[in-house]
Amino acid sequence: MMVKIALIGVLGVGAQWIAWRTGRPAIALMLLTGLIAGPVLGIIDPERDFGALQEPIIKLAVAVILFDGGLSLNFRELRHHAGPAVLRLVILGVPIGWALGTAAAYYGAGLSLPVSALFGGILVVTGPTVIGPMLRTLRIGQRPANILKWEGIVNDPIGALLAVFIFAYITYQGEQVSVGAIALDVALSSLLAGLIGFGLGYAITWLFPRGFVPEFLKAPVLLVFVIGGFIVADLIQHETGLVTVTVMGITLANRPIYSFQALRRFKEDLGVLLVSGVFIILPATLDWETLRAFEARFLVFLILLLFVVRPVTVLVSLFLSKVPWRERLFIAWIAPRGVVAVAITGLFALRLTEFGVADADALIPLSFGVVVATIFAHGFTAQKLAEHLGIDQGPGRGVLLIGANSWTIAFGRILKQLEIPVTVADTSKLALRTARRAELDVYRGDILDEVTQDHIDMKQFQQLVAATDNDAYNALVCADLGPELGFEAVSQIGADQERGPVRGRVLMPGGPSIEELVTRQAAGWQFSRTRLSEEFGLKDHLAARPEGAESLAVLKPSGRLLFFSTDARPVTEAGDTVISYVPPEKAAQRREKKAAQAAARPAATS
Image (cartoon, rainbow, N blue to C red):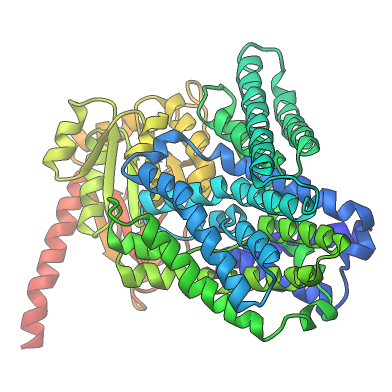
């Protein structure tokens, strides 16, 4: 058992790492890995290995994943027309998608009407477990990304509740219970579940800041609250626990709490592990009998789901909205289903089979078919479609310089000459004037403020350099933004070890402080750039450059910028451009020498 658990972790996280290295959809690779480890090789058999624990393990994992998703839903993201679009996709999109999904299952897959209605309700979800990793690899702008993220997380519990409603209707037939009574029961249960989630979220934001829970216990206490709230709500009414954890996450995301960033990262790390495990376990549950149960008629249903149900739902819901047509078309195509759809479908398929519904056994292979088809269709085409529609903003090539001073502005100029986008951020309007005169993009404000996320898309930056005159603030910027950008992408100017800590890589091999760099700039130091070739490599450049000069960065032909630091030396190749910081008198001599060489070339050619 220990070997199987360890293997699930290795396979899931390994698939995500390979996806990151290759740029392929992570969920698709995890799904393939689970299929190979399960029905193909027979190494992992969840039913045999976990037995009765399989269902509660998956349900609790889904609860934590949805809570993690709710933590990312800050109401500030609903500005810039995202809010009305999300509201439309919930109020209009859910009933339209439910009706069209039911019709597709009834006419396309040949299921009975009650089973079709139940499956159609489940399929209004667009799995956040799939949307999240997909959006992580795309750069399509904040509005379409926020719309897809909010829709996926908010609609997940709604789809589950629709399935609960239809299941109750099927099982209550013959007991003289009206549809209105069933709907009222589900609605009241959902309302109670939402109040439980809000109460737990409010309790955490009240207890934590007042010191009732020590720092080392905050993450465990939060996890226990999530699991406890989910189970309590689920005991009141099946699947309403999903409402509880989603509301709880949204409450925490929109109320002040000092430890929020640390707690959020803990939940994100836990969410990645759970997604990795669940997407190995679920496809491994398939067996050859289930796969053979996938009938040819189900292909008609999948085609209708991909090319009719989702596009019509989105285009009708967003008709006359302020969302641009290109973004509407992209959203209309992207609707991958994930773990929630499979888990809920499997649960209700088992209950309907026990109740004696004839075609309920077709739901399991059909749900896996939907997950596989949507993940592969949307995961492998999202990037190409975004590029074709013109909403793909490409990989982040910019550099964010924190602190407007003579050195950062001069550095920004040389980067702009190399066609690298530069943004200078500072809280001082006066300090930013020089940056504006240098025609550099500027941002006035504290880069660590939450409101900054409304104005700056951090995905546009490949590197960040903290270069203010406050060493502690530079370290704080690197520590806070390192997890988001990657610690290999954040650097700080050398700190006085007696005054300030170091949390990022220290720029340049000599690690000069910002005071020293500003003094050098005033003395006439300048930036120079040298293109390496097969005949003139890095060693030749280092030997030829002036004494005292420092290597700053290497620009790759692809546009990737790598910094020299006190403990890192980028690997250089022919075609790279080395940026150096050189003394003033040597810089003048260097320019004269280059001018002489340039003047001599035409003569030599003639």
